[in-house]
Length: 223
Image (tube, rainbow, N blue to C red; front, side, top):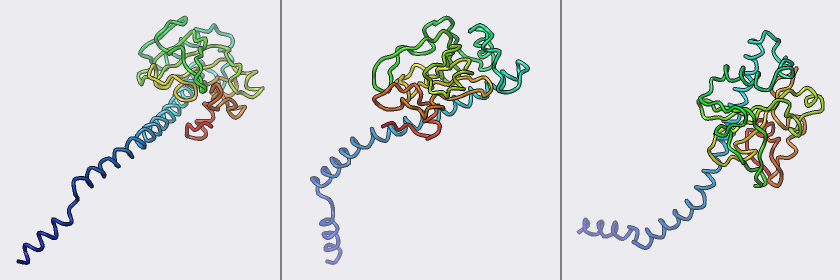
């Protein structure tokens, strides 16, 4: 008799079908709301990691080039004297790319890309390449204006890299997966925005000078 009563009590404590369906529905709603947020946060964290890797790769490459040229580290005066493609050729020898695009050839840097404000934009990228890890690097000698540098750094700037940290994969957007780094004679690699606190890193602005901000903050968080 006691056994039957216990079984009955257990049965009475079970969930009904309607309760189970309601629980599943609530879980589904929560998932719909939270999963995109989690995915976006994860994506941004990945962009930050890749940007820092690109920063490291470029910095180390410039040091290797200076040593290879027999110059003190930070001395990049020879870039100003050389033709645009001479430095780029040296750069390709050090980074060992899987593809090189010369004279604006399509295929390395995706264009057009978008600004932070969503407007389409394009940049002069005469020389570019793709590395084995899928990053795309473009080079343009003397293209230093409006990169958020201090007055002295802009005066001594000898060229600019544009980096798409995930190649042709979307979003191809400034401040998210597309960033700028300048090469300053006497200093070496200087992220865009270093001298003006990334003044255009707002959702309603261009996003050209965001590299310094993202590296400093270790986050992509624009207002």
